[in-house]
Every structure is written in structure tokens, then in C-alpha cells.
Amino acid sequence: MTKPSRLASVRAVIATSIMGAVAALGHAPFDWPIFTLIGLAAATYIILKGDRPKQAALRAWGLGIGYFGVTLSWLVEPFLVDAARYGWMAPFALLFMAAGLALLWAIAAGLSHRIAPTSLHWLSLALALTGAEMIRGWLFTGFPWGNPGHVWIETPFAQLAAYIGASGLGALTLFMAALMAKIVEQGQGLRARLILLTLGAVIAMGALTIGVSRGQKQLPADRDATLRLVQPNAPQHLKWDPRYAYDFVTRQIDFTAADPAPGQPRPDLVIWPETAVPTLLEWTDTLRVDIAEAAKGALVMFGVQRGDGLQYFNSLALVGPTGEVQATYDKHHLVPFGEYIPLGDWLEQFGISAFASRVGNGYSAGPGAQVLDVGVAGSVLPLICYEAVFPRDIRSAPERADWILHATNDAWFGDYSMPYQHLAQARYRAIEFGLPVIRVANTGVSAVIDPRGQLRATIPLGQAGFLDARLPGAEPPTPYSRYGDIPLAVLIIVALCGLFARRVVKAR
Image 1 (cartoon, one colour):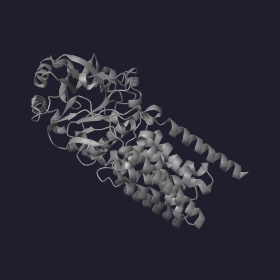
Image 2 (cartoon, helix red, strand yellow; image 1 turned 30 degrees about the horizontal axis):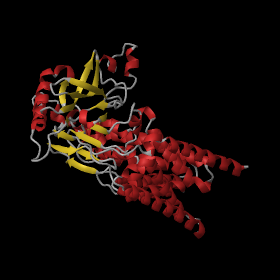
Image 3 (tube, helix red, strand yellow; image 1 turned 60 degrees about the horizontal axis):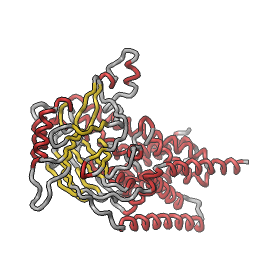
């Protein structure tokens, strides 16, 4: 490669990185989805101008670094909780994560150039990137955060998730971006441009019509049950400090005991967030009685750590009117390196036990998704923190619940973007499954979400308080709840195989 061509290659990678950063502005806290479409389209145009698979891969890698670097900028926040000790790690963690995730896009772009004939590189690129996003949701237990489809949550297009999921919306976004790039590509005749433009317009108008139509349908009646969401707003650097920890517990007990607004019923179920109680469940006998007395006959569900021999679990406990534990749920989809060390238990058999969760170093995973009976509030599928970003964890439940509970502690991740991105994904789970989602967060945003993903009521980020609300009713099972991402995966595989076959035939 000559110096001018090497310089041009570097410029192209820088350009796609900038466009990736622009595309990230569709996510919270900005919520400008048009920027996602523009950024992806511009980057796709640059990628398509590359003649060789290596060029396409490098440019797509730049796109991914810019996109994930901005979208996941909140990853620096946990290192800043104790900045004196860990702050230096923050930029490296973000860079390595962004570059690592971008590798999937790079591989997809490189392969897309080999799969399809040149005239259809735009289509193979959109399909391959969609495939990469689906793989990202599964690889190494999965990390689907920041899918391009998430940017449409504040628009009618979000309602399509009931049929194709957030992954399907991501596929549509990548397809439309590639279509836009193809339309402006040099060498296109007027007739070809008009055909592509018409195709894009038909798809956009069809998607909008479906979204608006679904959003305007009458919602089911609310259940005859009142929930109280408790948000203690415990800063992460104080939450586990022995000098302050029980002040936050007392705050939650006070919120639990508070009288409802005049003329409103007392709650049937009170919900505290993830790890709301800073001790083991086995050590809470007296505390549970205090909580039950404050609840005045209501059930209470709170986040707590639970021990079983040498193993520890990140759990939710359901407490009855006398303080008895009626049920527990153990988080089963754990955060790699945050809640456990991958292969830690395997290393323990060789005498290296420092990373083994089964001997108390980190959390152990629970047995799987679980549906709990919560009295007049019906049946609930609990999710703890990170589990809400995985639709497959909801589909794996043994039965369909009446509603979904998302208990979380987002205090680790600051107050800029992560809590709002996390909330957006919880809203997508409501749309995908036609179920209300009740979100209870330590520092916010706690929310009542109806089965269309709309926010009924919230406690804002960074505020302590409680919220009483009726439990929204559930809609019938959606197509996505029945089939998940299987139709999309089949479509991607069949389409890519078809493009490859076309290339082979043309090469003969």
C-alpha cells in the first residue's frame, strides 16, 4: 500500500468513527434517532467505497468504535465510584470494550464483501451487521446493549417490537441506512435511484402505519391491585458504608409505612430495589418483622443477598404480613467480571479458588427464570438489573406472567446516560411481550410501564420517594413473545446464502 492510499485508508476509518459517534446520538440521553440513521448511512457509504474486504472491515471497525464508544460511555462510571484507586482504568475499559464489540462489525463487513456481488454489497452489509448484532446478544452470555433498534423508543416505530422485537427494529434501521447509502452512491441511474427510493418510502410508511395503528388500540383495563414503588436514592459510595447503610433501610421502611394520598387505597404490594437490604437474607429476621409492620398487611418484595452454604446469590425476597419469607428469586443471568469471573469454578478444580463463585467468590447463578405468585397482584416474572436487556430470559419463563418486575441498582453507572438507556430497554420488553413492566431502581428511574411501553408514572433520577400506582393490565401474547428472534435469524441466514449463491452463479 502506497503512502497516499494508506493515508486515505486512515482518513476513511476516522470518518466512519465520527459517523459512528453521530449514530450513537439516537440513544439516551439525546434520543435523536434521525442522527442514527444519518450516521449509519454515511458510514455505510464510506464502507461501500472500499474495494477490498480488508478495507470494509477496517472502516466498519472504525464505525463500531465511534458508535459503542459514545453509546457505552457510562462504562467509566463504576471506576469513578472509588476514583483514587480505580479511576485510571476507566478510559482503558471503555476503549477495549468499544474496540472489542466493533470487531464483530468489522468481521461482518469483511465477510459481506465476499458473500455478495458488488452491486449488492449494500444489502449483504446490512444483513451481515444484523447478524453480528444478533451474535453480540448471545456471545459470551451476550451483551445486546445499544442495538440500533433501541433508538426508536420515543416514536411510533417502537410498536413494531411486538412483531419483530428490538432486534428486528435494528435490522430495519441498518437496512434503511444501507438503502440510503446505495441511493446516493455514484454510478446509480435515475431509474435505479427511484426504485430504491420508492422501496424505502414504502417500508417507512408501512412501518409507521403499523406502529401508529397499534399504539392507538384500546389498552386492557388495569388490574384491581395497587403497587408501591420505593426509591431510596442511596449513592453507591455510601450504600454499603456501615455508617450510612441502615439509614437508607430506615428510609425505605418509612416510605413503606407512609399513608397513601387522600382517597387512595393502601398498596397490596410494596417493592424495594435490587440489594435494598445491605446484609444476607438469613440475618434479617428482626428486620423483616419491622418491614412487615410498616407494610400494614401488604406483601413486600425487596432485593437482598442470599447465602446457601458457600454460595451467594443476588436475590429478591417476597415477605408476608408477619415477616415470613414466602418466596425468593435468584438472579440467573449474571454480569461477567462484575458478578462472577468466567471459568472461575473450572479453575477451582485445579486449586485456584480465588475466582470460584461456588466457594463464595462472586455470585452464583440461580436456576433460571421464575414466576412468583404475589396475591391480588397476580403472577410476576422478576428480573434483576442486567436481565432486563435479554428478551430470551423472559421467553424462557415456565409460564406467562401477568406482569414483569425489573428491580435494579443503576447507581454504579452515574446519572447521565445509562439509567435512561436501561429504562428504554425495559420499555421494549413491555412492547415485545405485551406485559406491563414495573421498574424499581435504587436511584431511578423507577417507573410504571404499560404494555405499549408508555410511561404511566415515574420517580425521577436522583430523587428519594415512593409512588403508588394501579397495576396495568396485560395484552394477549404478541407474535414476538411466541417466536422471538427465530424468524429474523432464519431470514438473515437464507438471504445471505441467496446472495452468496448469486455471486457464485455470476462468477461462472
